[in-house]
Amino acid sequence: MSKDSPALLTVRDAAERLDVTPRTLKYYEERGLVSPARSEGRYRLYDEEDLNRFGRILRLRSLGFSLHGITEMLKRPLESVNGSHRYSTDSLQQIHDAIAQQVEALDARIESMRRELKEAQKLRAELSPDLDYLQRRLAGENAEALLEQRRNARANASASAGNQPTAKRVKKPGESTPGESTPGESS
Image (cartoon, rainbow, N blue to C red; front, side):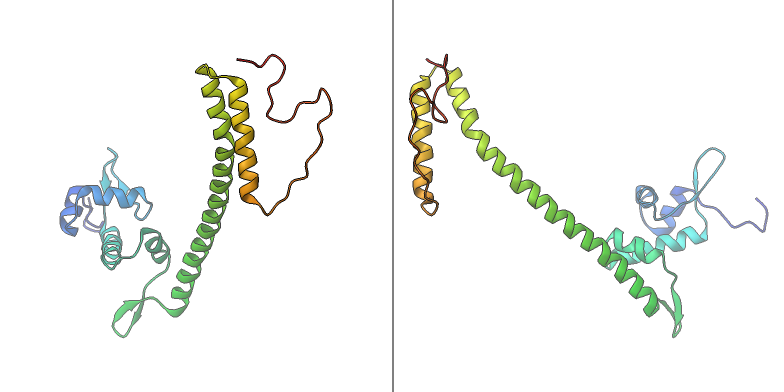
């Protein structure tokens, strides 16, 4: 290493200097927050810029910022304001807009998942009586008795719903009603 090249630190040395574990440094690299150089042997090597970036990440984490928020913050430079480094109003607006966009996308995803969950629960509720019927039939219960129970359950459900009157249809000779056993279906 020449005198002009900056000192590079191994994971262990960088972690010690930052007072964190080597796993913490690797985790932030896995999340794409830092990209250290690699030696010929593929070992991670950290320079001062990497350490400063880690320091910034660690400070933001200690203040309770999420890694997604930190990712957006790291995309913008800090500016010198009254002797300290801060984000400009424009940078803050860009960070705000990026995070707000992520939140909106997540809200839409959550709503979509809620609709899908509701549909799945409805379908499950529709299939449960069918599964129950089949399990009971396989256990040897009488088909006619089970079908009568299903008819009664449907009638009770309709009566308790009450607000939707159902028209009674006269059954034609030889016609089966929904839920009745089909030819060959007997106990």
